[in-house]
Structures are given as structure tokens and as C-alpha cells.
Image 1 (tube, rainbow, N blue to C red):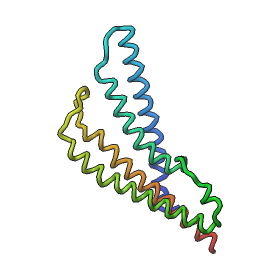
Image 2: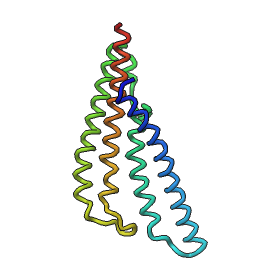
Image 3: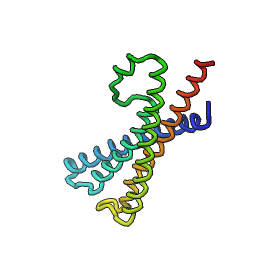
Image 4: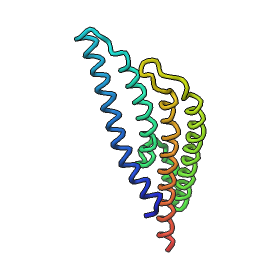
Length: 162
């Protein structure tokens, strides 16, 4: 197992824990808002914003996690009908294109995050750039997971040829 695969495995585990935490934040925040609004008759001004920002981060991390676990929706009927060698080539091209997409997210996500660091969110008063930072973080995770899958695909191909 190469270094990139080990890093990917560790980041997968970390991503799971962060996603659990983000879901808990969303559930607790939403529950508290509903409770306070209908029982205490006071609305928590920042709960909706916190839930929304947690969902943004959950989506970015979850997208990379889905790539690592290979659980994204795919139409693979044509690929499955191809010979094994061609399937392997298509998988490599797929992982390469996914890594390229992650690179686009990383590059432009950094630009958007920097651009919005001066703007504060209305209720939480945190820089909006921190919310947008989910995009480059997700992009970096996508790159790492795609490269790990590409290296595993390459190692499997070399074992078959040996």
C-alpha cells in the first residue's frame, strides 16, 4: 500500500468522524430551534445559519467520501459489457477526471474563499470565506481519494500482468 493510499485511508476515517459531528450539529441545532420556537416562544437567531453551514461542509466532505467508497450514482452498463482490460482503462480515466475535477474545486475554491473572508455571516458573525472553504477542502480530499484509487487500480493491473 502506497503513501497516498495510507493517507486516503486515514482521511476517510477522519471524514467519517467529522461527518458524524456535522450531522449531530445539524440535528441538535434544528431540534433546539423547533423546541425554543414552539415551547419557549423564542427563536434562536443563529440556528438555521449554523445548520446550513454544517450542511455545506457535510456535502463537501461527503462528496469525497462517496468517491473513496465508490458509492456515487453511475451508469456502468456499457462499461460492464467491455472486456476487463478496457474496464481497467476506463476506471483509470475516470479516477483521473475525478482528480481533475477536485483540482478545479481546490483552485477556484481557494479564490472564492479568499475573496469572501472579509464578509461576515449575518447571525454567527463568522467570515463567509470559512463557509466557502468547504469547497477547496472537499476538492483536496477528492484529489487524494481519486489518486489513491488510481494507484490501487494501477497496482491491481500490474499484479494481473505479472
